[in-house]
Length: 392
Image 1 (tube, rainbow, N blue to C red):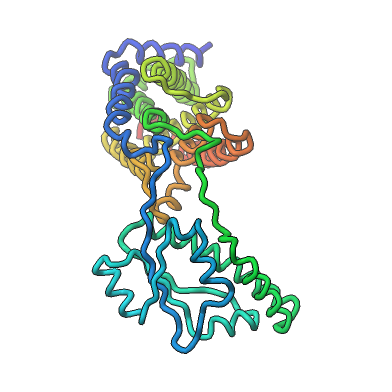
Image 2 (cartoon, rainbow, N blue to C red):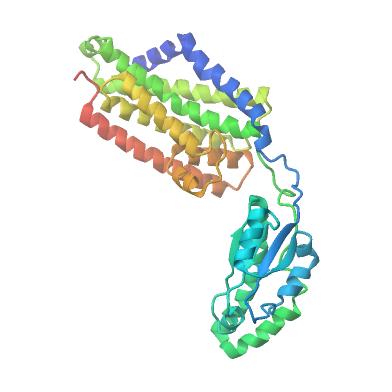
């Protein structure tokens, strides 16, 4: 009963504080509304994007046709001609100059000895020179990669069957050159995409759950700074029970906050949270665990509440930024760094729940989040054993 007394007292104290109610329940809903409306243009509406034709220069080796393996037929196919306009280039330097001037959108440099290398079973690769338009670069790269994949099939034949057998394979590729190996289709015909409100409802839910750890940080430090820990210590209750009771009390209020955000955004903004409430609850519980352990660890190892709050806030903002919580960041390095954050696994897991993804995909993110939570729990336990909840 001693533990439950501390827990119940902590819940009552938080619920009675108007500032806490404002920060926990009203501020998240207001922020989701602002971000969902202001940044809705950043997210795909589900409609197909009309692609402009890309002008591409092909720089071929001097003295070589470099048109075997069905290259010209590939470029003349209707699917390719609708998106790629191929031109012959004189040199690599001229192609670069045309790219800088904006006359072309993309350039391909075919290396010398390309045909001979493929016939001998060597890897087939070209050099791509990217232009200013990221989307056109992406389309052109995928298009020519599709062609090279077919050429590499010939290369594989040469490796397995010998160079003399690669010639019939080459002839087969040329006979089948009417096929472009590229298909124009919509990626959204059978799938759903999340809206701006869904994305920011998920990201702000995670961020505010992490911020809730500041409450337990303030509660633990207020007993020390207010000298009330002496009074609690004089009672027949252990410091560990006080410590655990405060953590569980704050955790229950934080889960109540999660429920308000989920049901509030669903009712007010029409946010669809998917058909897996059990998985959603599991992610919320794990994020709360990470939040509490992060705050507890920093609180126990810091000399003051102000320092602890500053450190926790910096960590939360950094993790939210890296995971794309404010805005998706298509940078490979940042995406790699985000995999070490709580926000990444929680956000991706919730987005997959919203899109009704396969349970195996959702469980993968829950598992990774569990590992992160387990590590933070272990660090928190070690910090408590080292510092303890007591006066210095």
